[in-house]
Image (cartoon, rainbow, N blue to C red; front, side, top):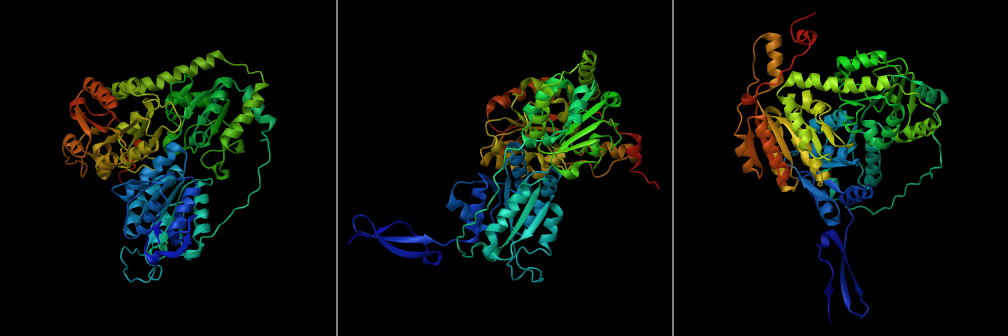
Length: 582
């Protein structure tokens, strides 16, 4: 008699049974037991997850095993939990999908907390799956391995929300709820903590079917007075945020712009909502004298998915017109920083489609002199900045000439990123600009790796400073291991440049802001990057071209000592805030 073993597993993890094939031969079948880890992976697959970032640990091994067994989800490995969260964040921002990260318990979850606050600031839908101590030990101060005094409280402070699995058999609705919450407006990160003794626990393979109401063909109603206000405006301004990008409404935005010919300004998160080479796109230049003058004379502002952050509104002092139409899916977004005359609650794409259809029937009297004024403002804000920061305006020119239009640009928290990189380097497609919304340094490198994993066909370029870069420098090897070639433009000034300026301006001396750096070229090469120095704009031009054509990870170390300091000057009021005051 012939025996055929179809699958081999330990009896402890499966049920053995026999059957016969069509020829009457006995077949030994081993059926794998269904566990909490399997249920977690099943929910990820059903949610459309195709990539997960993380670090394996004894406190998440069953979940990694379940991922391997299922087989359809790519497991991208980072070198630190902080970087893994950043990678998942960037993956979500550049694809519009749910980002997923898997970390260990206690210290591992805590390492990711700082990056989770960035994800919360940016409103990125992200699911953070982490281990937790054995459920029988939680909160008992028994110092179980990797135990944290209160992991739930720590995670709750860094996330939109945080949940602890308390009953293994409830894992499926538990995961469904967490995924749904991460994707619901206002979107944000959600942590689920799975105790170590639950992950491999055998449970029934339940089928949960969510009943839903089929959507009816509903038309969005926009009051006629709003359509009339838009159609009759002589000096309209459109201010776009990342709401346009999240809703995929760039085409509808362009239709509106072509119809009413407004000035278009973007938040930093909204870069790329409209191609920044559009003649009416002023760009990320809201807090400038030229745009302020346009605002003061404007008779209409249409803001779409904009938060009006203090850094982009001169700490809330920009003079917005009273005639302000604000479009946002989040009902809590209105009157948060500025008053709104008309608040339209809805998805930007749907609302703009309705407005555009209504405007087709309206005759718009365009003011050609205003259109020219907008174009002049667009050029003036750029010229002023270029003149202030020379020779680094030439670096932006070279980048605009060389970078393909589909390039993803990442700017870390560094002077070269937030003074000129986020303004002068044009972004042409939505989702192709990433910055640190919450202001934490060092997250740019893992963000760039995550973006490249998400969009392998697009070039990914990172602007970083030497201080911030070293925070997560180990993720260079992750780029190589994950076959995610990126280009790093590292501006090396031997310290924390912006803090050197602020200390000098406030106190007339400096402390703790000068850094001993490695040989960045040697370090990059040791990690599998190509690397060169650039000590002039001509060298930068040549090396950037080589990096782009290489199709491999490349570091360009810009020697700012040779090229010159980046000039920057803040307001006297802000400088005074660092000195003793009442």
